[in-house]
Amino acid sequence: MSKKNNTTTTIVKLYTLQEVSSHSSENDCWTAIDGKIYDITTVIPLHPAGKDKIMRGCGVDATNTFNRVGAHDIEKLKQNFVGNLK
Image (cartoon, rainbow, N blue to C red; front, side):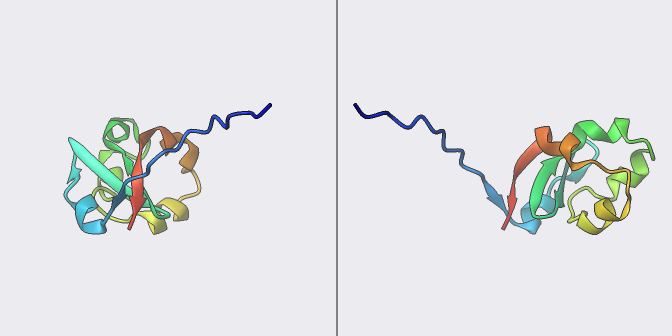
């Protein structure tokens, strides 16, 4: 008797940094961190350091800033994953 393999294939979209840069407003904010893209729009009003600090990461690769600040937790962003950076 043979078993069927019940694996699910997830297709991950790829985006350029130029595409990410078009999402750079308070109402539509994407950021790149370690090669992954996250929609952090809903995080903006919750950011402990204030809106201005997190807005600096909108539409850009914020890897250095994110990793430099020790309080950041990538696990919290996983639910906001959009795709990978090309």
